[in-house]
Amino acid sequence: SDPSFAPSNVPSVPTIRKKLMGYVGFANLPNQVHRKSVRKGFQFTAMVVGESGLGKSTLVNTLFNTTLYPPKVPLAPSEERPKTVAIESIGADIDENGVRLHLTVVDTPGFGDFVNNDDSWRPIVENIESRFDSYLEQENRVNRSKIVDNRIHACLYFIQPTGHSLKQLDIEVMRRLHTKVNLIPIIAKADTLTDEEVLQFKQRVLSDIAYHNIQIFQAPTYENEDEETIAEAEEIASKIPFAVVGSDQPIQTPDGRIVRGRVYPWGVVEVDNEDHCDFVKLRQMLVRTYMEELREYTNDVLYENWRTEKLLSMGVLQDSSVFKEINPAARLQEERVMHEAKLAKMEAEMKMVFSQKVQEKESKLKQSEEELYARHKDMKDTLEKQRNDLEDKKRRLESGRPLTPEKGSTQRKKGFLRST
Ligand code: GTP
View 1 (cartoon, protein in one colour):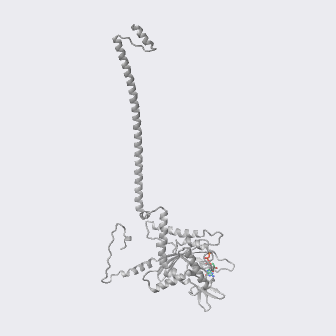
View 2 (cartoon, protein in one colour):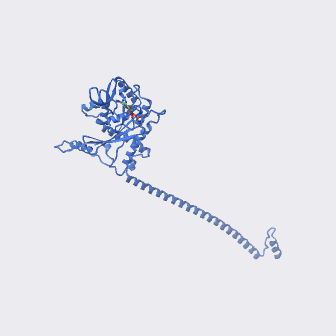
View 3 (cartoon, protein in one colour):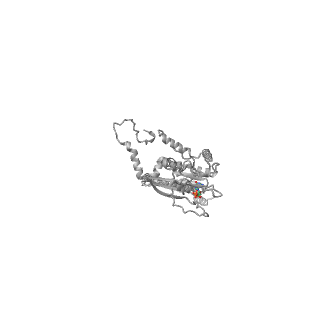
């Protein structure tokens, strides 16, 4: 057992390897999973990004055999092919041998037409992140049984077939995208380059990608894989970046076959011919072999990283807090505890103010008591003195001794005269 998966309060169970005495039936588990997923169907969303006029819309039509876009009205020679001006999503339910796939293609407006293309990546990144946001919001709902996965599972990045190296604009856009989507670089309109030019251009693009630490989708390899699967993965990997040709028009070859391709004075370029371009390998990677890997990597790595960053930026620090963010009961409990703590704090503050006021009153009372006592003592002393004086006078009068007049006192003088 792996201790890293066991919660701290659950004791780990020792694992013993045992041989089966007979057939139990869990070997049928993969079939159960297969049946269930066929019943549920699959969702897949691909995005196309690149400069204007590189054949993005055409390739989408080619990839999914024009079932996504309605057939286009043939254009008059004077007419300009319409440009994609906003991010458009086209969805289709496809059924192949009983397996249902809900496919969505997100076509983005081509960039590179403006004097300043610095922010070309912004609406694309915003679109990718808003899909992550919507997924996170669905995860946080009380009922999570009907989550719709609209996240971008693969992003086909179209590179202009210049034959030189990657443009600064491509590097900038790819650097903004590579941590948020599975990037699949594509050399567009490969029919405009010779075979040798294609090979050299691929090398330059790959070295630019490596130099700028741009992460592109790599087919994963697993242990104990059979030779055929390994060879297929190696062949697909050897074609990256895929040099593709797009065409949604069926044409007739000189030998009479109807194919999808482009006609030139010197011959025909066939889209589905592996000797002519990498279209078949691209489709194999995107649909036949690695669709599930693309979905898994999006969920387990790209979305997970974005989610962690998002929650951290919202101030959620630990897993327990993440739990509270997601669990409404835990959040209510936390709110209740916080409310009680607030009430207790208010009560303590009120008690403090009250005792302060009582203390002030007490010290004032004590002060006035002391003042009263001092005044009382003064009066008592004065009265005592007066009493002593009077008693002294009385004694003198009784003994017949003359009273000693105080200086300047006429009354005393009179009294003295009378007694003499
Ligand atoms: P925006 O919507 O402006 O971003 O353009 P886009 O990238 O979607 O290009 P679109 O598919 O509209 O194609 C532009 C032009 O290129 C059309 O005339 C297509 O016929 C042509 N085109 C498309 N794919 C290829 C290709 O593989 N090779 C060549 N030579 N031309 C192509």
